[in-house]
Length: 592
Image (cartoon, rainbow, N blue to C red; front, side, top):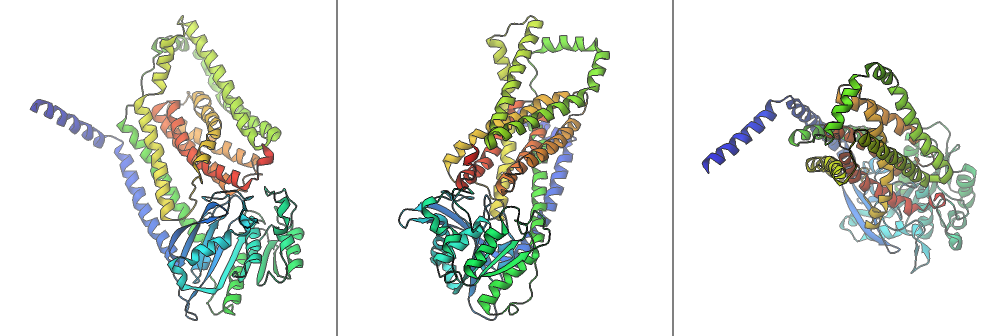
């Protein structure tokens, strides 16, 4: 018994000693260095945040039968000229969510405002769709979401610190339409600012199908008596909404104040990423709430530092994840030997006799890589042009099916060439090689590195928290499987083998990552009609990050099933959140 304990003790000692003395100790050193840097950047982010708000609460409430969510930000500043603080509700644009755009929470809370950022119907975590109607009132859900949120906020303890005569609304694009409707129907909202609002349209359009409720569309609802203290800010060359049909029409109906933006802006005119927009919005609220533009002190726009620190922290976290993926490979047996040794030996002998031919073949590898990549992109382009958004799904099915058929035919030919029959044993060997237990556990652990770190950061700091609004959307998101299956086929089964003239696995991985970046950028450009939706753009970023992580996993495993597990675990979660938005905004129905 004691001898067994001694042997076990010796094995453990040898295991950890070997690991500690190995060259992979460098991974630990890099991880520790990144963690130290992360601590400093998190402290900087916390200091930056504390200048604006003390904390935030996630608020849950009901509207038109659906569960909606909002973030309530508590200001750090006290107002010397009045005891209680103002409250504004912020509504984001179409396809976005409450914590993508942090400009309003950051800039208003540091001036003493409570800010509630709302995910209205069909967006973010909130349920329902933008076409929901409240059955009890026959009012479109969007026209009462801000009011329902205000009713919920009144029940919370913080509201005793709110000046009930200083409650306002601010919204962008579709969110601008939302605040216009709510302020027209609820006189409790005293001041409203609408950035590039949707005012004038005839349903069905923009995903809205309110033919029988046209009286609630801003162009039919707004007038001078229900829209006091209203400011509209819009770019003269807004690429998404017509300036005359929306901003000028609202001005004509309500005699509201209108500020025109004329200078070129990052992200285009519709996004209104401009310090002037924030500056004018703050002045408008403070003039109408405090009867003064100066009593609350000078305005200093600093939200961009917040974004710099957020992306710096996210970059460090992603780097830590990639190093953890590489280091974790040390603790698993990830390279099962091929079950086709006889075939490999014979083909190796053949390849030795064909050195001259191989040199010619190597010179054509880059051309082949470019051709296959071009075919993949053109395939997406053709199908998306013919069938719309769902064409990407069809293109992925066609690409994957063609590859699998050709791959199977080549495999059978190889067996016949070496006089080996394809039978149950061959199938079993293939499955055994692909679905190695150690590989499956390793790839699952690697994917959870990403998910857990992402969730921890998102809860610590409210930014880009993507989560599906229902279990149904998680199941619906399975439809994306052919898409990332085809992407992994391109990178792992087509491009990677073409790089076999490169000896270093890491160098192969670097080239794959470069090609992945180029391909994703091209696909984003081709999908420009949809990338104005932040959640869609965010999905492209997630795809790129997952591809990089999968490249590291594949470097250690050389197993296709490993990258599929990683893709499925991560992408399904995020894409199911995107599905929530796609269904919620109803904007893509005409494409299917």
